[in-house]
Image (cartoon, rainbow, N blue to C red; front, side, top):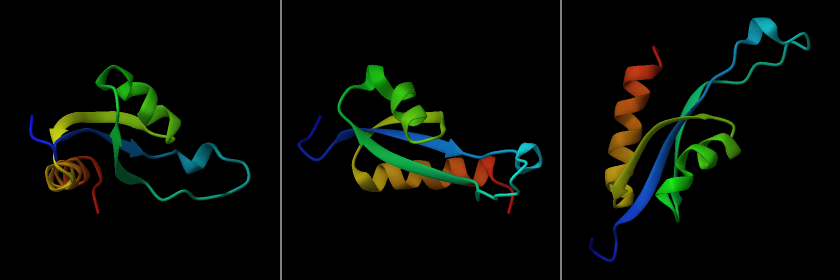
Amino acid sequence: MNAAAQVWVIYVVAFDESADPTGEVIEPFVGKESIENVDEAELAAFMRGGNLAATIRGTESDAERARLAVEQEVLRR
């Protein structure tokens, strides 16, 4: 692994607004975050309010490409 490569978690944040009695709307989004330990990927996604979609090893550019691919697959805009 080269010096610029890292472990990245790709996560999806989406909520069912119909179940929220306050009427608050949270826009769904797909995020990415660099993590230290691949074994903690699911926890890292959870701590950011989302569900784990993917874990990749690479550069930030690689992670952004993966994030965009997940976004296109998961979010219908």
